[in-house]
Image (cartoon, rainbow, N blue to C red):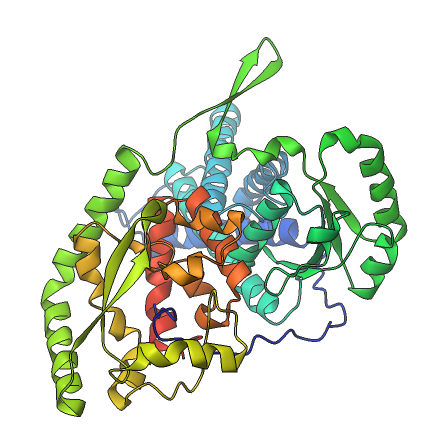
Length: 494
């Protein structure tokens, strides 16, 4: 993904006007009714497959019977599913749960219902009985219920992009827990939370914006802030030694007619580092000192990086050769551009890129950043006059960063991770910004696939820290897959 550091870019970050509340309400029993209907559809399709299509011979079946006698067992099957899914929480909000987790819960419920209905078959010995049809029904039920849940997620994502079904969130407290809540909501937009701001009694933090998340002052006028910002949900992240005040704030939120949630301050710990033991009913919490990017995890990430580069090397070499030829033919200047960057734990290194600007571009950088009024920690200069014609093409598609692969092979970077800053940018960092240097920098990352140049600096840091705290092979794969359409559609590129 494109990196603005060495060759600044600009995009005006505009806050949208506060919208009127939009909600999307689905009746409580809708999903239950839909599941029951789909079970009957599944049994009808299973009957057709068993007796009409006769996928498994013989053609003549002495047990052939009408569908009507199967209806009572279909109803029992549907009822068992509903009871199972209600008990497992499948009909509650799917926030925080992946589609695969839902599919697992669907399959588990179908398996339990199938076993019970088989038991009823053997118990009552009905004249009409086909174990094969029940197997068909179970498989089709899993398929239908899984597909409807996938469709629901797609519909939710579409509506949330339109501002429908998104909860406007006010966070109370700007400490470690509050920052963890904010960066999770920003990183995982699919959950349907839009943090509009935070309040805190510390005047040094209360009026400082974090990108597009506004500092809305202290707690004194909480009710007024809730009304003015059209808040739907208040999340309280104060430490538990302020128990009385937390209860008071809960009452203020309820009087304002909004939902209120409280985060216990044990969540100041990264919960992936918390070990829970049971002492005869007494929970014991232990904190692991393991660092997520040490040992095996770091080796796994390194192996994946090298393997992907090797597999894609024929295409990359051909593409790189064409770009190099175009740069040389345009002005006869150097093909590559090297710049000092800050990597893992503050260690400097030289990053390589295809040159996309005029030869003396670096000398003009400070002046242009000053004239633009952009954040010098993350400057973004739109219509930068230093960019060449070829440069505009390769920057828009992020192909100017293709030589970063050399840095990846050297072990100075990874395919996925925070973009490496320049030394002068790091000098302007606040202490909490330094957390983004706790991992190898990357060619693409979480903030790039969440808006690229449109993401303000503080939000970028929140996303990078979220990535570091929640790294997994699956998360890297998701970011890499999202990178391709973002690049092709030139989303947030300048």
